[in-house]
Image 1 (cartoon, protein in one colour):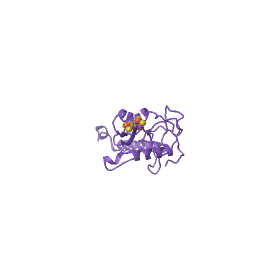
Image 2 (tube, helix red, strand yellow):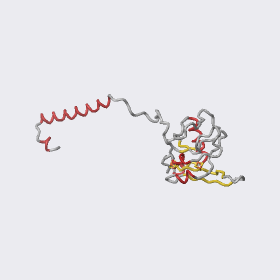
Image 3 (cartoon, helix red, strand yellow):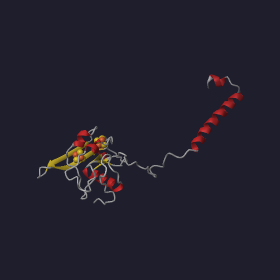
Image 4 (cartoon, protein in one colour):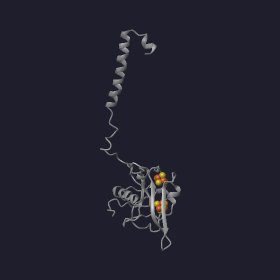
Amino acid sequence: MSDGIKSLNPLERAFQGAKAVAAGLATTLKHAARPEITINYPEVRPEIPAAFRGLPGLPPTREGKTWCISCNACARVCPPQCIYITSHKGDDKKLVLDDFVVDANLCIMCGLCEEVCPAPADATKTDYPGVAIQLTHLYEFSGYTHEDLVFHLPQLEQIGAEFNRNTSRDLPGKPGTLRYAEKEVK
Ligand code: SF4
Ligand code: SF4
């Protein structure tokens, strides 16, 4: 108890106490009258803004293949160096992708991989999404080990396909790029 309170007589103390209780109640009532700003997650899902940056995925071609040309530009620019690409030279001397790995334990969802990804030669195809790697709206992933969050090519293709199925987001700076949101990706 502070010296100030100690020096008060019982009546004054009771008055000070009631004043403090009234101030607390006023604050509670003020907030009770405000509209709710929280949601009952995960039962209620938040609305994700179009430009939200979640885990990168690999949007597929109509045939369900990746657009990636194994140029490594994304792996080189990635700040935490969490992209690992392995490829080999095909019969036509072009690089053929063997595996594409994103370590989600390290990814900071900065979007630089999407920004640097170049258009492959057949970018005029109408279903080209503008990039071969694309940040999706996926933000919920967990695992028991580090390895659980290391995503390989099939998983990244699945993440990219799901995203394109569920959104028609246009890429910033790349207007007019076609999203095949309603198209069933096989
Ligand atoms: S979003 Fe950023 S951190 Fe994540 S893979 Fe792409 S470049 Fe790397
Ligand atoms: S995702 Fe894009 S930047 Fe990365 S290796 Fe493939 S084509 Fe190159």
